[in-house]
Length: 385
Image 1 (tube, rainbow, N blue to C red):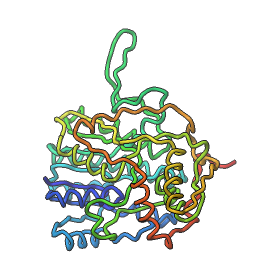
Image 2: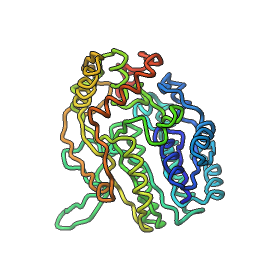
Image 3: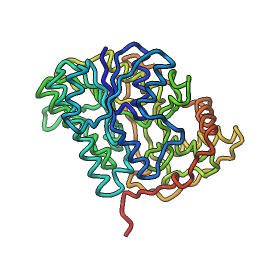
């Protein structure tokens, strides 16, 4: 299959590209290095060094004999994206090409404007490129569980049947995002649904929880093939941050009470989910929404896991509850349905002690590169008076 991966230099995009190419698909990746540039601008560089996209693909080819086509370009520029669609004629497009950081989107006006314009502009352009140049193409779009917020009812997979005044209808599940970044993803979903029902597009929207993990089958061959491992307060997930803090001897920074609950999944399962979505395309005029996670944890539970395993490894891990820089509920109900991908055949990898230990060991190899100034929160949702 001809697979176009937008955002192919990202934490998810690069492992997806290797995985697809290794499986024999014809793969083209497109990226404009926005995430790398923003990381440099905010002093939020990844822990492990990552070659540029051309060098990554050359190394992957040398190790496997498989080729990945590279386009350095901006998906928010329709002329550039349109050219790629015309030349490559994708059968599946995997859309990761968005500014991925909630804290960055809350940093100030310029960051908020960039997030809004890039994320909505890229999604809008993808929809039009498919309509104009590849109408049979299946779009696999990365959404986020953060779109739903933390409602006091069970979270269904994208849709909710509502009865009102004796009548019933099905609507997109009500969304109440907790950052501007997550709000752009909500707007993405609304935009996609409009074009799906108006122009019979085929879209799978994957509502993904936070991802953890470093190694995939392909990256195990050479550390230069590793994805971008950020541990800072802007691009680093809570799991990555805790792992690095444990290794660096910094108390784990639990924001507020630590009862914030989310659905998490292993990087290897992200690859499974994207493959399952691609291999089981929806019909024209259908928007399929799948909640993509395997386990639910509170922040406190994650801290306890890292502390438990770290102490076994002799790291003397401490935990510190700090003032929450975000505006969010710190104790809440959270129960999200996630049966769709399991029904398609997902075989989950769980966050066992062995998995946590392997991640800690990986971080320990790069301990000398840890910059402690990147760990403490530098962005607040509410401006200080």
